[in-house]
Amino acid sequence: MSFDCRKKYDITDLELMKIVLPLFLDDYQKQEAPFSIRNIIEVGKNLLQKGAGEWYGAHSISQVIREVNEKYNCQYYKAFKILTFNEGVIYKQKINELFEGPDSSTGVL
Image 1 (cartoon, rainbow, N blue to C red):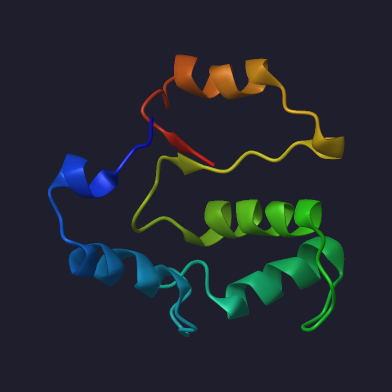
Image 2 (tube, rainbow, N blue to C red):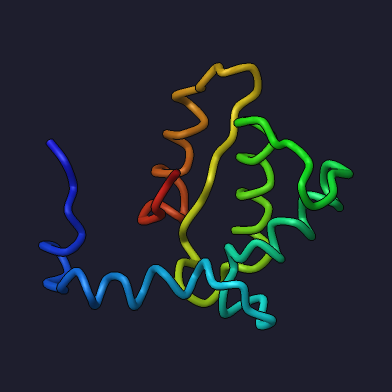
């Protein structure tokens, strides 16, 4: 069973693209485009001491995306959380805690 946000919010593909794509634009306004490559590079340098063009493994980029979301993504998805787990072990309890607390309506990646 898949979730299709277009049906839930009754929006077209074009309207969805107008909402999602600006989040990734390479924009100088950090909050306007929280997932821009500039923000990812800045956070990667501060968090992992990696510069532009250096290799990020799956876990490294997950940590960076989580930090970018927490630092810059306040305009669109305040309740959106990104969880990362070490060594590929996912803890169900940690996920469940998000849905039991005050942020119970949060989205999780």
